[in-house]
Length: 177
Image (cartoon, rainbow, N blue to C red; front, side, top):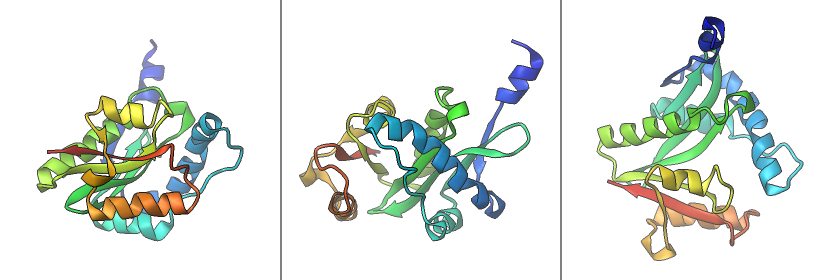
């Protein structure tokens, strides 16, 4: 592998800055193309509202992967929910997928949750898409039964289903510490 190729593929995970916010919708739309294909959808998907990203930024729970020029190409946004860190969104631009970036972003969230003394990491996702629930299982998360879900997580899952998510596919997951 050439030195130029290695440099282009080098990246860093860091806390996001306010100047990164302008790039996140572009990342999300690009990444959705992969999910859209997996789900048989042709739309662009929805982007996380900027206000939500700003809240994640203010809570120091918004991380970006940046290339050698410090340009973001992936992110994970989280918030506190039920004493755990809840992953709101994670996206990796297609050019950077299948290179371990999403795994490193999630590992950063897990480590941050441990450092903060959170009870764990939670999220909602698709049960069947390989880079959704099966990916999170590989990081130690597991699908929760309704009776195991804290109130806020259950409310989030029900909201998503009420707004169009397939109840046979949508699941809540957690890694408890």
